[in-house]
Image (cartoon, rainbow, N blue to C red; front, side, top):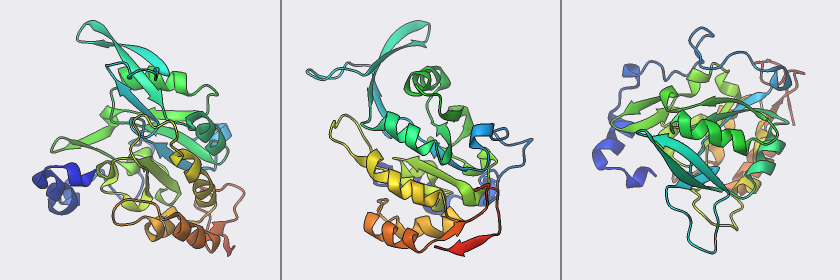
Length: 254
């Protein structure tokens, strides 16, 4: 979290960084030749885009096995400096259901600051139903004073139709209006965070511009006020275009 960062890094990210020095972090999507993603796949065409962080959002990984009686959900061999190491992965409760359910109304993107040699095979295992449309890794992030920041404009999708869920506010420093925070997860088998987000995200998939509504229910300490979100989204402007997410000007009051 931001409070855990050294003061100079926190200040640089939230106050001292001149965004003009990082032109890639725009409020408009990059054009197709420069965007990281190609055209939407047929099954996702017209949907809003939901970028999902991996570590501490969907999984928790360690080089040490979890303490008994807990067992790793996945043991992943990863090559590090010429040696094969075992990575023990715990999967957050509800991950498979969350992905399957949200794929019905979103184009799903994994956007992680982890290396692809670890994250890519892990997502292969997590995505048992093949609902994840694309994956972005550390090379798609920007390092600012040692902190990896994710650029939502890099996706090349309309910013009014793009969201990111991440446990680290520093990841979406330049696009907070597109971000839904989630509590970091390590091993709690009773965690319900993903389940709690599903109704909210399904409602957001219908609005005309996510940036108008997210700041209305995300608090200053990076938490979702679900009661406020329910009220806000019940009165939101919805997009009535058959191709939701294509920037239609047609909208009506819910």
